[in-house]
Image 1 (cartoon, rainbow, N blue to C red):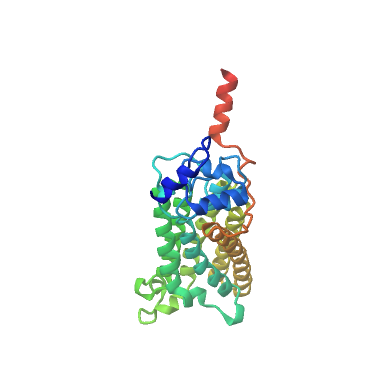
Image 2: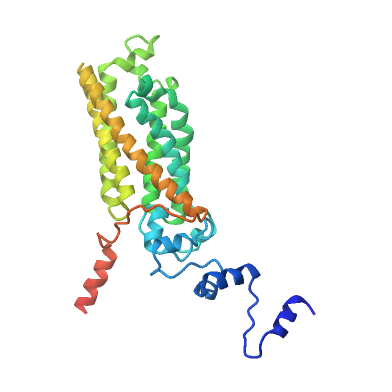
Length: 315
């Protein structure tokens, strides 16, 4: 007689035998969470009415199923909506990959813009990070968000991945972006001091600011930390635009002040980014405590909910 048959025969006549793992039996007896064992799968989380903190204690990176809308927005930085398939429960969460690509590119750049410890050079010293962290990881994370059905995160990560590729290629001599503005073809670096280069590149930064503003408005359906990131990025690009245009007209002192201010706002965005990245990594390893991100999705009701109410009242 094997062990399972022996345990079944020793059970009381009225007891129902449940061949669960011993570790799960111990956890159930110690903590009293019977609802966790009653689920069809031992990895199923609690229903949607469970708080985010409670759900985070049970979550695993590869088992993100049946999570509350608040927790979903914390992990994927986008409002929860139904999609076909179960890719979210099969594969890992790509959001932290894109975030770390952004952070390891933007944080050093913010410090360089503020001139800490004599840094400068428009971020040329960290050129490699723009390609292999900012550009590559953010684009990769965005594409993976696309397959998971997270449209907002997909667009945000891919567009900023493109930004980092653009910044890196602009500073790379091979692409001759600034060399085209030099009066001497043998001295392409002189184009970095030209009026035309700064006036032209300022428009790219201006519309990156507009893009960040649109993302800021959309982020009002997620959490405070994500809103803070786009708030900081919006002012970063606007102030950098002013800095480049001030250089174009020869106002070096004003341009320097605007550049420092832009670096400060970029650093604010990075602080918020490090916070939400850390919160996601704590959740992925089921850490005993979690970081709040300030869920505000309930402040602005979704359009689908408003439509349901309208149909209900008109019926």
